[in-house]
Amino acid sequence: MGHDWMQYLDELMEFLDKHDPNRKFSFKGELRTKFQSLRSEFQDGFIMDVLGSEVENVHDWVKLFKEELEEAKRELKIRGALFSKEFKSFLENPLHHLRKKLFNYTYDLLRNKISIDGFLRVARAAITTSLRTNMRTLYQNWVVISILRNLADYGIRIVYPEYGYLLLERSGRQRIGVIPPNCIVHVQGKGYLSLFIEVPRPLSWENTDDLKRIWKLYVALRPDILIYREKVLNILDLNRDPPILRPNVIIECKELDDWYMRIRDVRGPFARPLSAEEWRSRWIRGLWDGLAEILGVSREEAKEEFKKKAIRLHETKVVELYREFYKPDLMYLVSRALVTRDVIRELKSYKIKVIDDVGFDKDKLRPLVDDIVNNILANNKKEAKKSMNKRLREVFSMLREYGIEVDEEELMSVILEYVVSTRDSFIRYLRKYVE
View 1 (cartoon, rainbow, N blue to C red):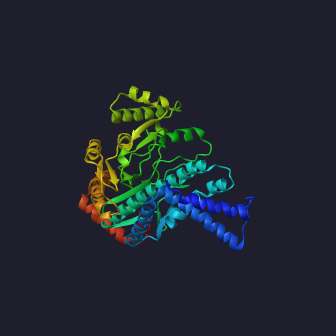
View 2: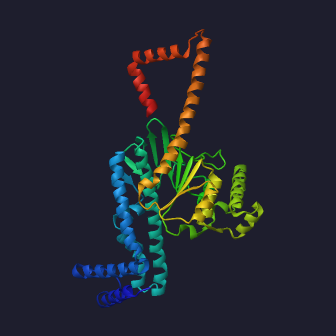
View 3: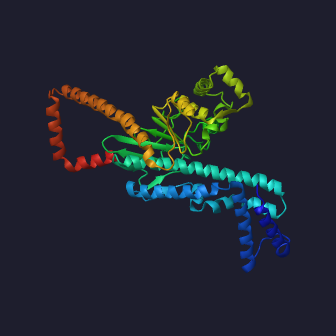
């Protein structure tokens, strides 16, 4: 740890002792400008001392992300993207955003309410957490945008939201007790894909404390991206165990070089407030089974681990737990950096496909997109054909009730003639159906 920021702090303290001994901070004119300059130098010096070269990486990442977004606006014909307030501030000026995280701690230090050691402890945690969170969000959002850009080669139309912006945040979107998508696209000739980012999150159900307690279980089991192969406007279903629709695809994004060496405390899913409805106990049994599977122990041994109400899992085990719990048709892990062959083999044993060394190259996500289109959307056609054949059988059955016997070719010919003869009403009906 260097000491440049402490030199800036000494200058700032000397200035305040001379011009503001009571620490009211009510400067005007040149004194105000001088104070703000000294404060910024101190904060910037502290940020650079703590984060070092990572700050330079931030600016490179932000530049690449913005370039990707501009390309997406052109290719997807959207006006832009909506971000959380936190992430938007970070994108606009990363260094200024980190300065804001130091605001309260800086004034506490200047008023001698906390010591230098106290400032170092809380301020370092604040800017490190902010940086890590926003870098993770940036890469996750980059993956979403890059997937959509690759899908554009198949011919897509964004059908939700309808106002020309891509939703890349979830704030306030679950207050009415539903979990809506971030984006729904129609892939030409193949069907719909619904994308959900970082769900499920807690719901705001005003009078249902019970549901709030239930939803805490999901906090630690929140994959980065869930994808469904149809138009899905709400994945919450309290009649299911667990109470969300099973995703067809899960994509987990890793931005750090050493992500697979890191350890996370998992508490939420295994905390112990459950005792009411039967589905809760069935759900928690499924969680224990999934955890026991990835740890290679019995369910009872897994429970013993949670007498501390938390368990420390390597990131690879958390990813495997997602796979065991949600059971998607496809699961991918997208890593910005290279991943060791041992980790890739381990994840592969859980049917998790790894795409590593991606960096910010959208073309490296092409195999993932092709897989979704060819193996997930392909099933849409099969399902649609089954549905159409079932509907045709229903129509023929109805016609026989009226004593009408026609073959399929005759029926289609009559339907087409009817469509032409009732063009206006048919167009109105079709538009309503498409919408």
